[in-house]
Length: 377
Image 1 (tube, one colour):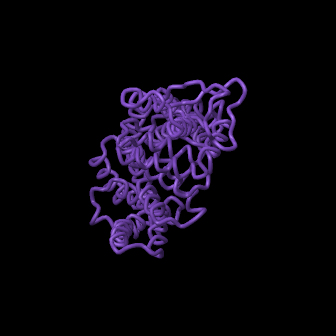
Image 2 (cartoon, rainbow, N blue to C red):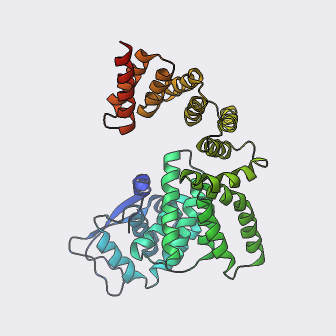
Image 3 (cartoon, rainbow, N blue to C red):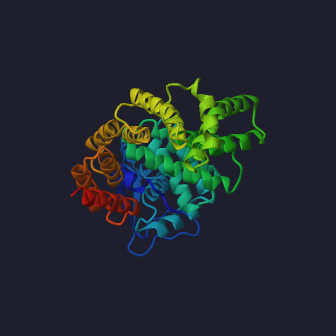
């Protein structure tokens, strides 16, 4: 079982202190003997310090404290050098060790020590990758922890980890909370149809009335979003006559949603209704200034109505904002060609070919420009 968050929790080894148990130490653990040469065992530093402060000398290091330390260590690094020995120790010390670690994880979460809880839940999965309670607790706590993270890259990794483990849980059993959390994850990722599917599966399970109400509210939110997803996917697949009406139907209620307006514009442009498309892409720019894709689309639309000067200005603006791009350079070259400015047309088509020398469309455009240049000399 792989864990995506490993690089982000390595630093938590700082929470541990190691002591050496001599091979002749009396642990009174049936079926377990300390290996020859002794064994370095971990303890949570805070717990050790608290015990030193408040307990008698013979109560400072307990089996329970060692179990927590070993579990915490394996939760941070499942490939720790003493992994096999720690697993043997844990299994011998408590036949219900997974429940013991889960209890400590839940206790950590209840005390708002989320990363500590995550590490404990992960350690159970190191021991048993199909422990359903650990999969659920791990996934849910990861999502809760994400809310406090300022690092966007870290949030992305922790959310992906949560999604993976909750999906693994669903392969074992249909867990309502896993379905609910995944529905929200897919909604946030703009996979609305998938989110709807999980919500609908959830309503088929036995859940309490309050939970049902929350799921129904989620599905209501998803209704229009699913229509949007169906519409823009159809447009991207070239089925404009199918997708565009679905999106236009939403436009009145979502007039400030730039993604929706953009795909409506794209649909109209595909149909050759350039005036309608231009009005939508201009609206997009009023909502999301300097969106490069909208600038390029406006260039294509103005080219479609024969206004090549306007088209070239939008292509130039897109290049100025996003840097040179072979496709945009080719479109710009064709605009100059249509205006009769063959010198600039050749310059930009050559730049485009420098970036993508094998693009068939650009090569065709180059041939056309060279023919016009040749006929003009």
